[in-house]
Length: 402
Ligand code: AMP
Ligand code: MG
Image 1: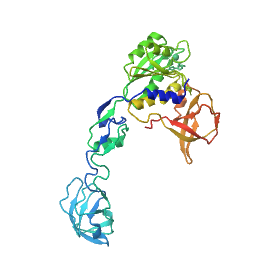
Image 2 (image 1 turned 45 degrees about the vertical axis):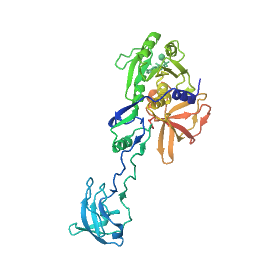
Image 3 (image 1 turned 180 degrees about the vertical axis):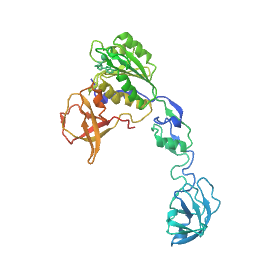
Image 4 (image 1 turned 90 degrees about the horizontal axis):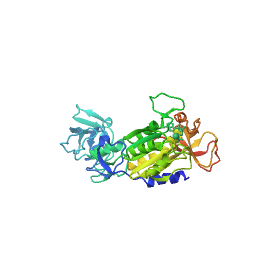
């Protein structure tokens, strides 16, 4: 049995970013950049007014009030025609080009129009350069504005558009196949007979994956016999990652581990010192990653978060792959179960004193319903006796943080 850290490291060591492809920036949200993005222009591309007001020479308004002649109105998008000279001003809108001669923009609130706006009375003085965004102050032509491996969020999409990138190089997202195993499993529409339960893992796993990728196929339910499991796994081997649930424990009908080996899958580990989720299997077949997760729904859920999600992030090109831990003060005394590292469904909340966290009521690794009250997992170290109320503990959020 290996530690959670070692298992997570083995997964990442055997996972690499998929090949790059070009996509329209409108589709690029959530992808990771495969190449540096370079600006094709200075930003702003001209000295730009940051205010609606008057472009003036600061020296002209040093002893307010000052009356200036308005020579032009410059709107955003137009090219100014006049040059501002001593005793003159140009009315200017936010985003417009600051005319030659002017060295500052006085906001409209600090002025009064005179003679139907042919003149302006400036009521305050102004520092030279005020309210002018200088050409190139945000970015320079040729500058790397977004580095490879950065995740594309809405603000990155905006930057891509502003530097003229319509199609962007990103790493391909992995295709994911999901297989649930178990003679007891029925599909949602089927009649619930004695001894049967509905297959929930395929759906929770698919939903977990779909937070970050698009191509997720629920392949089906494999009965607990080697032939069915073999043929279903074979049908999923063209995926970038194949996730199985169930059939990896010590039962007489737990064939998944055996089948993987018979299929020539290189198996890296089969047990992790973890609760819930001890019988977690990770292997590789050509370029397909195989995760055989324990069937108990919370174990399936937790092991996806710990091992599959980081691997997906790595395939997508992310540099940071493992979910970060945050600290919160535990709200109650908590007795640890010891020996294996525990990931305990819990709820973290913001209080006046900061973040606090409390375990949710939970009946064990089959109790998926309780996890709907959880938004995080408390990490309970393997050798710990207990947490004392108020102690700062590590918490893994169940949302995708990067
Ligand atoms: P196993 O890992 O196959 O020993 O299964 C452990 C427990 O999880 C058993 O109670 C199974 O019935 C349950 N289980 C296995 N697969 C699923 C699934 N796809 N959906 C819901 N529960 C499952
Ligand atoms: Mg089973």
